[in-house]
Image 1 (cartoon, rainbow, N blue to C red):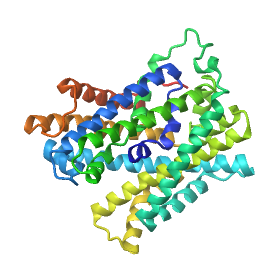
Image 2: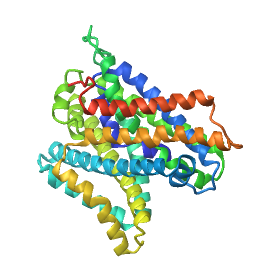
Image 3: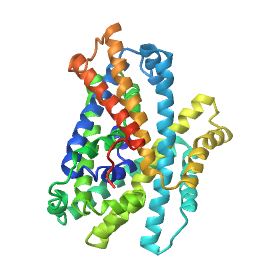
Image 4: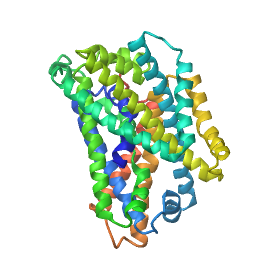
Length: 398
């Protein structure tokens, strides 16, 4: 549940938007491919971590296996991902609050005000204590899974195969749109920071931890496949051009799905699920950033110390969310770029260095150097795809 809860969240709302060019069949292939490489890069972190004392995390093992330069790159990538995702979820929170208020009460709030309300209310929860975040996140995760499967069950009978398989799109190109979407798929399987935490929890039990990584990453895969099917079976490919034109934020997609849903109950379930997803994602990511900053700057755990930590944690992304409230899709893409570095490239390099130096007497990922090079290549291709897409050198639908 820790692995699945870390991966599943508001980022899944970006998947249909960025995959609208490749549509359903290719998005299924890309999801399975991304799951394969992200799962195995997690196993490579596990293999490397087993050579160090329990409690050792990325800073220790990256510095020892790859040196201070790679450790700096890795550390900056982690902080970058956490800040960018915190901003992304403020943007998504603003969007979903507006959409919920408009659809239920007919109230249209300015995005800046919604972003501030979302950020400061949840920042207060993080400031209170880790235990508060833990309890609220546990409730949210359980409710999120329940409402999603209720929603999926309600909408499955109304899916249109002509839309799902785009039968009216004869002669249309799908494959070229894969590459710009890859970083977003990678960001949706980002559980790797929890691998050292699992070893700290279980001890040096590689078989147990491997099962955690397998089942914890399979659950997001199943949910993402159902989610893609529910969206692409309800909204036409052509309709995504308008969704993209409006920024592709969570509220825009939820509103389009609500219009396609047959029945108010299904629409309400989607609204509830999206609120849970955005809130739990924000709490999980911002807590990680909060703890990292507290450790980095040695802020105390007193009320004043936590207030200092909260200021450094939340003020920069909140300013970004207020000044540029529609940047959810862009932010998730940048998170995928940094995630490709510390979640794919660095684990492959670490395990290669670890094997050359000492090997692993407890556990070794199958596939030898061939799998290591394949994971490394996938990470490099993903990072390159984001950079090429950012400079408009790749075809992007819409």
